[in-house]
Each structure stands twice: as C-alpha cells, then as structure tokens.
Length: 390
Image (cartoon, rainbow, N blue to C red; front, side, top):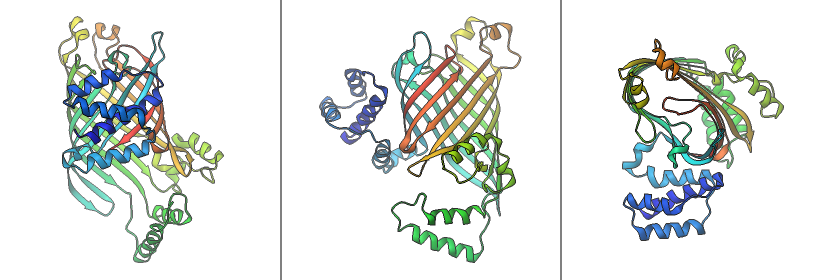
C-alpha cells in the first residue's frame, strides 16, 4: 500500500471521527495497519499529517478514492461498492456511541441478452453482491449480520425509452451542445427543456428478475455462519412519465409530493412514478454450520426460510438545486414450520425497518429498528455518517 493510499485511509478515519464526536485510540489503529504490512515510519508520517490536515468534504473524498484506486486495474473490481462511514448509537440501557461502517456491493460479472426488440429486453446475468454492518468495537455492533451472494439472473424488461424521430433527436443534440458550455447544469432552463423532451418519450417500465443464489451469512467475527442456497423473484415498476395516470396514483409518494410542493421543490403536487417500491421475495435452504444457540436447542439440521424485502426511494427536497433523498426498506425473514423451541427462542422470525435521509455530497442520517439473524437484541439505532461511492 502506497503512502498516498495510507494517507487517504487515515483522512477517511479523521472525517468519520468528526461525525462521531468520540475519542478513538490511534495507537490501536496504528497496530492494526502495521499488522497489514505498512511500514512504521510511513505510518508515523501519515499520522502526523492527519493532525495537520483537515478534509471533511465527502465529495472530495469520493473523488480521491476514484482517482487513487479505480484507475488501477487490480482495484477496478471495487466499482459497484459503496461504503458508509458512520457513528451509531443503540437506544438501550447500555447504549454507547460506536464507530464503524456499512457496505454494499453489487456487480454484474457478465450479461448476455437473449432478446432486444424495441423496448423489450431479456437475458441472463451473473452477479456478486455483499452487504453488512461492521463496528470497530465488535461488541457494539447493533446489526451484526453480513451477507454475501453469487447469483444467476434471468431478467426481462418491458417498456422504458421509446425511439425518437429524426427531428426530436436533432433538437436533443442541439440542447446537449449548449449544456456542455454551462458551469451549472442542474436547474437550468436548458436542462429542464432537455428533461421535458426526454420524459415525453418514456413509457412505464416493468422489470422482472428471477435468480438462483448461493451464499454465506455470518456475524462480524464469523463465529456464527450460515450457508444458503435458494431462489429470489424481484419486481420493479417505473412510471417514468410523471404525467401518466399510473404515476398520479403512486400513493407511496403522496406525502413526499406534498413536502416537495410546500417547499417549492416542485411547482405542483407531483407524485413520482419512478418511486414505486421494489419488491424481492425468495426462499432459501439454510445450513447453520456455526450457530451455538440453535445447536443448544438441538436444531442443527438445514431448514427452509422465506425472505422478503421492500425498498423505496424518492426525492424529499432540494438543497442548492441538489436532491435530498429519502430511503426506506423493510426486510423480513421467516422460518415456516419452525419447532416450538425455535419459536420460543425468537429464532423463527426477524424483521428490520430502516429509513435514511441522504444529503448532497454523501452525508446521511439513518434510523433503524428491529432485528436480523445473529443479532442479539431488538435495537433502535440512530446513525450519522457519509457514503463513499466507488
């Protein structure tokens, strides 16, 4: 690891400490990094610079990450990774601020199209995905569940962008030529004109994805592990044209359409047709290779589990012409036909609800309530941090 990468890593830590407003043992951090093979003299120089420098702009950090890592071929695999550095606090009697990060990785390794006719496409893709929550002090991790999967997807999409005629294509090209001369595109009259023409050529899109998945679930220390094998069905509906009847009936976006209207983000009450919730439902065979609690109950055999996930995202308001996003997700796990011992121990059913406000430049606030597999207790967790996009 080069000195430049060491320094970037430490600057990321410094910024997260600004949010945490807690003390962090830099000697412990130094030991961890030295164990990774970083020379002590290079580390001392970086730590010295850490105190002499200030970098708290998440947008600058994002750009630095891309420039340093993604231009090198071995690091290109990181494309598709987002890391949210954060401090979080559980609302429990022994609650304490904890520093850590959550991560989400989604990458298509290969994609083959079987059909591409007009606005209808279908195909097969291979993907890798991973997500989880990591605390630097392991005992304070409120959502101690890491999941990694490989999947084969069979997908089909109907609708979306319509082919434009030659006159419209010429108009769009003219607007694009003028847009490149502007310093600030967002909110400009030209940009709004471009969007108006583009949106008028969009139709409602339906996307269906059927996948076969295999993966690993664990806690942060890997003292609890599940191997999984199963399938998932995903459904996504996007009424891209907000003037369409379907968009007007998106009741999920009504509260946010009111807020956008009252804050003059929009000139009228306009529910977004692109913010219909995404639905995922699956069934997996779970092999609990490491689960002391289930073993103590005499439940070491594989079992079936239903997985359900609902995801929602929309624009709440705008700050300096940049959107502030509201996100929400509901994750539900159920073991049908579970034994009496499993039900009494609360191991047959898990539910987690998460909401987040994502501000420009990567800063976000989040609230999570519920419990995931391997979590010890039902928690209410507040988080504050910023997101790094690779």
